[in-house]
Length: 446
Ligand code: SF4
Image (cartoon, rainbow, N blue to C red; front, side, top):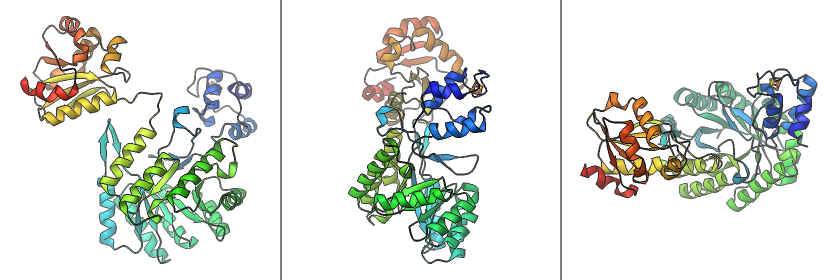
């Protein structure tokens, strides 16, 4: 059963040395109890207490680290069933698929598509992260050859799929720097697959149809000393996948049923050959608890909406989405281009930058940090007022890039124009439109 912050605090050294990054042992205990801190952060906890606390403070769904040590990605580690209760921590990984039946040219092309598929959004680089390599003929040399291509030609995380332990071992050798996932352990091969995963210290997908069989399999594997397991309920019908994902998450969180306390993998590539249906199924899986979805092909028109959906679901609802403060050149501005300013609320940035881009008028867009508040709210909160905006403009470095001394402020912030003129006496302050849709006409008119 989970311990409270006070119960954890009683077991800490109480020296308030701050080495864990928290000002006091009590603050660290509270953070630990709410899943925001990791026990390893305190170097002074005794082994005995460590064992006690690790058990009690571990998230109900085991976090699993993948990838190279300098670019670790985690799956699992979730603590709530509904995003509005707290937040979801580790985004669903989106994977494409390669098989040993594909030609070299086809594999090269798919890896190129994988590497090229990157979308810039809200200052973030959105992209799929993983490639599944599927063994079709039991040839270990061929399998490790495909894995090697993934390693040489991409930075993808790797999911290795074969029912033959020796084939998986050859692939795992080739991908060892990225901590690949082994798939699948079933009731029939659990001993061999479990031993392999243990020997290589790699995550293993446990696959069984039916909750009893899955619980029995994961219990057997954990009994062998394996900790990093991933669940596949074996369902390949979307209705069943949805039901199973919900049941597994709920069982792990509410009664804290340990055999299901692992992240879930959904292979939508095995559910249908229709790429559009795969995208729809992946969307359902992302919405309801999948840690990894595997598609047979990574088509930009299907992956982009999935990336956006994922971004929305895994964004902390208690923190506004923000863009980084700075100067954003839009439509290749030069030193004579106009300068506009707005707040760093992501939605504001999206809309304003989109309208400027659509206008085709080269423009410098300055984004000021208002802690993610929109223009009106930031103004009302005193974060987007004349002196603050003036100070930001002076320090931003915009005068090194543009000769223009005309600043366009949002129509909703018209009230700050007087103060801003005082703060920036060499500048002309223009009040822009209130509605973003009027921005193109406004820019063209100046
Ligand atoms: Fe307390 Fe440990 Fe943090 Fe030091 S590192 S303040 S002893 S919890």
